[in-house]
Amino acid sequence: MTTDYSSGGEIITLSFLLAFLLAGTPLPGWLGWFWPDWVAMVLIYWCMALPHRIGIGLGWLVGLLVDAGRGALLGQHALAFATVAYLTLQTYRRIRVFSPWRQAFSVLIFLLVEQVLVFWISGVIGYPPRDGWYLAPAVGGMVLWPLLFVVLRDTRRYFQVT
Amino acid sequence: MAALKPSKRVRHLFTVNPTATLQLGLWVALSIVVMTVDHRYHSLDGVRDVLSTVVYPLHYLTRLPTNARNWLNENLAGRATLLEENARLRENQVFFNAQLQKLTTLEAENRRLRSLLESAVNAPERVLIAELLAVDFDPYRHHILLNRGRQHGISVGQPVIDQRGVIGQIIRVDPFTATAILITDPNHALPIQINRTGVRTLARGTGNFQELELPHIPNNEDVKIGDLLVTSGLGGRFPPGYPVGAISKVEFDPGSPFAHIIARPVAQLDRIREVMLLEHEPMAAPPAVVGTPAKTSP
Image (cartoon, rainbow over all chains, first blue to last red; front, side, top):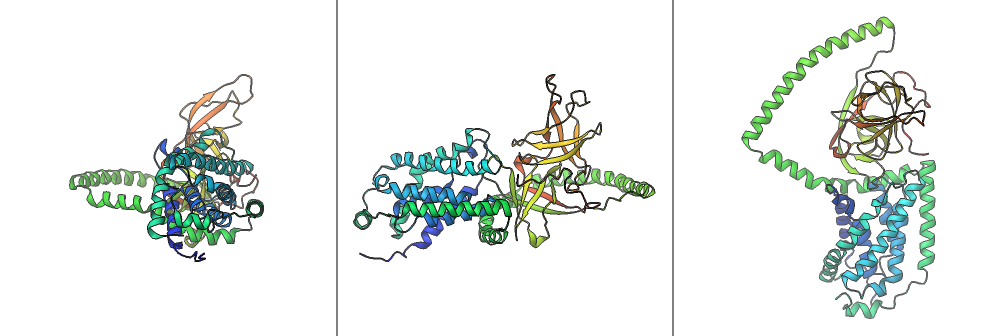
């Protein structure tokens, strides 16, 4: 059993970078409401594909960077992302064998948990959500999951990230 | 199929992390500590400085497509379009110059009269142009990130305006970036004055880019739709006289002592690209309690 886990670290970093950029690209009009949190989706993918390597701690760190980048409360996305990583790690054995469309429903649930956590914290510091629209990005994430999954899976296989 | 990963399956199918729940507990606890410290004591500004410097290049990359499009637009614009734009700008300049002449005389006169009255003279304000880097992802919190920071001499509390009117104020300064809160943020209130009548009140954010709420205006007050709101200068943060919004809705509810008044900001807050940061010296030491609009902590 090999323990060489160091291959493809750049690919993982790059995928997070791209997700960060994608998430930061504003979309016009109502589409913007459904624009998903790409960073969380990429985190779910890597937790699922490489559970021995990507986990709660890394999710937390990525979340902290997201907080700094978005000017949110430090720790807000860190907490949500750590939880998402935890949920994925607990269920990856089941989800991994689903087809991408069935996976999308699990992803929807993870993303909903993430949104709810983030907005709970926002509510605590005085920014309660005014309507239900804040859950829309999770739906967008569900719809776009199969696409992201296929792209990341092929990338991972091509570069043999283990 | 996702399942067909032979080599990896053999290796990781039974990877079980028995301490995952414990780990999660620890990280959640750490998050709560970090959030509390950041929110209550603001003593993590050093950490935030480091982190925001790390992610700063990413913001630049995010802007790359937009910048490229603008560059292409500028460079590939047809001759006719450019000539037309040139003519329009020249016309504008003539118009503004004419107005400026009037302004210089008025300013001189104003200063003379003020010195006669021995009141504080309005110091001329310096402006700094900043570009928008990012908007807050939280749709209910109206914060924007600007590409100027401590390096450029930005400080907390500086008013932010655009060519139409007031946008907000700086609430946090990082080495290369600064965060501004918009006047429509639910936690922001701005001391204003109705230009026509001189009634003073606050313009509170509602979380909607098109609406400001004017509380505490009695039912019998003279308020009309279309009245211009300007900053009153109370509180010392904003210089007086900058346009803020126009009254868009007035409702009198006989059951309540105050009218329900909504104004629409004159600045287009949902399509900001460039803003101006005023370097405004408060005239005297402003009393910190009078309507200081920044409220990042409850």
